[in-house]
Amino acid sequence: MTQEQTIKRIAIFGSTGSIGTQALEVIAANPDKFSADVLTAQSNDELLVEQALKFNPNVVVIGDEKKYTKVKEALKATDVKVFCGEKALEEVAAMDCYDMMLAAIVGYAGLKPTLKAIENGKAIGLANKETLVVAGDIVMRKAVENKVPIIPVDSEHSAIFQCLVGETRNRIEKIILTASGGPFIGRKPNYLVNVKREHALQHPNWSMGAKITIDSATLMNKGLEMIEAKWLFNLKPEQIQVVIHPQSIIHSMVQFEDGSIKAQMGLPDMKLPIQYAMAFPRRIKNDFPRYDFKKVSTLSFEEPDTKTFRNLALAIDALHKGGNLPCIMNAANEIAVFAFLRNRINFLDMTNVIEKTMESIPFIAQPSLEEYFESDGEARNFAADIIKL
Ligand code: NAD
Ligand code: MG
Image (cartoon, rainbow, N blue to C red; front, side):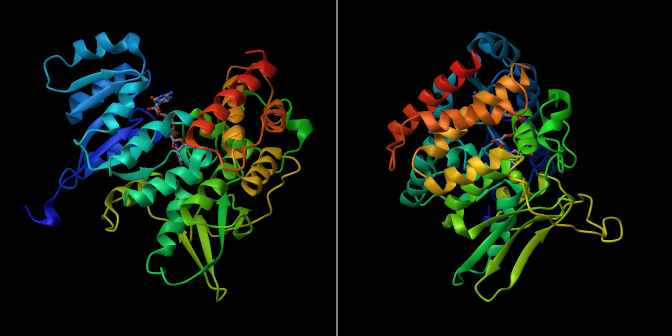
């Protein structure tokens, strides 16, 4: 086989989610380029089985141990290996049956398997932004030590990554992360306090998992992305700007030292950054709908309202202070979003929970990995106590 014909073996961690299922669509459309060799799901055993029967991976992992027998039974006529439980994610990440991990688990749960894949020398297509928010310094250091490329899947970071191709000798003055603004753009606290879960789950431009959809509505998503960008592109906090761009056509921009700005554009469709990360450095021809200037002829920009959407202000604070503060913020945010999705707290309470947790858990300037794990646990317990979960 020539290099050209080699099939890249993809391990999709979180294959049943929004990113995971779209990654499988890309693989299905390009069987000469990719195969799905590892699939993992937390609880959706039925979809996991369906995917395994279609893609015939080497291994599947079902997180929920109660579902192991069901998955094993459903795949008994195949030679797919079935594992279960949290530890199995790390064990499978340490295997050799794949070339690239697509890190598409949501939240903190994605960190440990991704670290294992890096230690195992596997390339990473990174959708799971929380991995870098929690322990970006350690993750990036390990990637350098193991000569592992981390290729962003998050659309903004993919845009910046694409703008930087061919620019290795040139300094970035700043990056401009675009944000759609979510469903509540222009709204004020007196409106937000009454927002219901169903309303917050309706994103104007993107169809995504529940957690990131709520993060987009609170603008926490953009805060997480600022921290993600800091680590991916080795930037100072002052070099990262956020601009609201409701049409989601410009996915982000880089401004160089000569003032020139490069933007990456297209219709909002996560399959494009997923495909780009999997195929990098090549581009693959596809028939995704194209952006037409005549149909979306106005691109507009505005400042984010951090006084109303205070989660973004908290994240900017965490970005500047660093240490374990982003990890604490992330943990509190995961608990707060979980509680909001279960109608336990209101939309604005989420910010109060995060703020109180950030003020209360001891700050560590240069945490070890163990200390990140501990800070995460302490912050979760503290936030859950406030909410009385
Ligand atoms: P999702 O909720 O749709 O899917 C999450 C996946 O992770 C599922 O396969 C689920 O089974 C698995 N999972 C959930 N909890 C788990 C746990 N505790 N242990 C192991 N596996 C678990 O989420 P998504 O929208 O696909 O997002 C995945 C990640 O990608 C998130 O970090 C998100 O921020 C990021 N991201 C998503 C989008 C998007 O368009 N959906 C865009 C950019 C970045
Ligand atoms: Mg994004």
